[in-house]
Length: 160
Image (tube, rainbow, N blue to C red; front, side, top):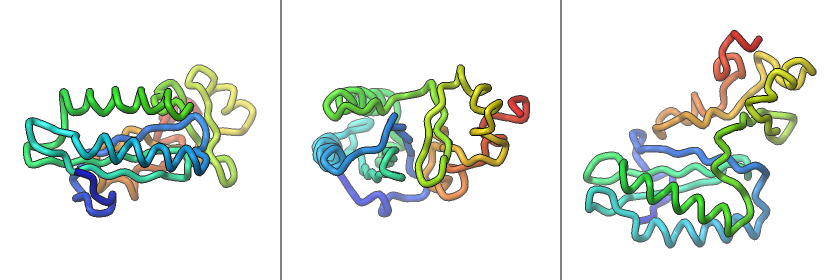
């Protein structure tokens, strides 16, 4: 069952999917349509999942979920990941980029592969206080304080 993202409880499970680039208007509309279809039949432990989503900075997709049977896990999470894999192919944006960090560069986000982070640090693009997207947030209540953090808190002091 789809609900507005804002209606989800603070303890809702959250997934942060990182687009390698921003969504255009058509891609956002197409994504909304596919998400609504998926969430209409999403189950966890036999109970309907209350799911919501929102775009963040037009480049990232936040999905939240809760159900009477407890937080979605196992097969319901696998179903979401398979859905996101299919969605990525349909819209042409990889949303499962786990090998990169996304950091604020002016008004947009820039992508850096983890293997090349030291290059970004050496050339001054990525500094201790550079704001980065923390895709490890797992509960809605943590979004305001932990979705965007300083690079030193995300990567650790050993990088700087």
